Length: 301
Ligand code: GDP
Image (cartoon, rainbow, N blue to C red):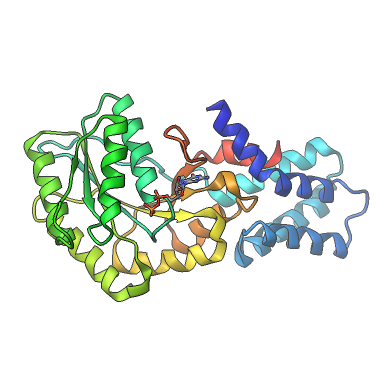
C-alpha cells in the first residue's frame, strides 16, 4: 500500500505543488487566478468542477485572507475533498447473496485494462478467502479468453470460456454464472468485449449479456474500466457505455502514468458514477480502492 501511495503521490505532485505555490503568493491577483484555473484544467478536472473550485477558493481567500502555507494547504484539502465527495459509497459488491454469487460485469474499450483489472480484483477476493470464478465473454478476440485464463491460473481461480471461434458472448456469460451458482462460489466476474469500431453492435451485445445473465442471477455490479491517460476522451466513452448498461462504478486504470488525476473529479461529476478502484501499475498487486482522503493527500503531499 505504501508503494501504491507513493505512485499516486508521484503522478499527482504537479497539480498539488502548482496549486500550493500559486495560492501561497503574497498577492493573488486575477492573473494568478487565471493560472490556478489553467492548472486545474490541465489536470483534467473539467470545466465545471474547475470553475466551482476556483469560485470557492476565491471566496475563501478573500474572506479568510489566507496566506501561510499551512492554512492554504488545509483549505485546499477541504475543498478538494468536498469536490470529490467523501460520503459516496465506493464498495464493490463481492459478497455472496443468499443463494447465488455476487455477479460483477466488467466493461470498457479494448486496451484500457479490463482483463488486468479482473485479474487484480480476483487476487484481492482470493486473499479475502472468497471463491471466485471468471467468465470470458469477450469471444471476439481469440487472445482475450486466453489472457483472462492466464490471469485466472496466475491467481488460482477457474475461468469459464468457449474454445469455439466467435461463440455467443451472452451464452458464455450465462454458463459462467450457471457454474458459479452450481459451485456455490462467492463472486463471478465477467469480462466483455471492447471493440468500439462497431459501437452499436457492442452496446447491443453488452445489453444482451446482462439480460441473459439476469435470467439466473442479478448483476450486482457493472464496472466500467477507463484509462486515466485518455482524459476527456475516456469521458466520452463512459457516456456511450452508461447508455447501454447501468454502470455502477468506475475503475480508473493507469493513474500511475499520468499527472491528470483530476479526471477522477470530472468523471464522477459528469456521470454521477463513483470511482471505486484505481489501477496503479501492471502488476497483480497494483490495484487500490479509491479513497478520497488518500487521493487528496497524494495531491498535496
Ligand atoms: P483490456 O483490453 O481492456 O482487457 O486491457 P488489458 O488488461 O489487456 O491491458 C492493456 C494494457 O494496459 C496491458 O499492457 C496492461 O498491463 C496495462 N495496464 C492495465 N492496467 C494498468 C495500470 O493500472 N497501470 C499501467 N501502467 N498499465 C496498466
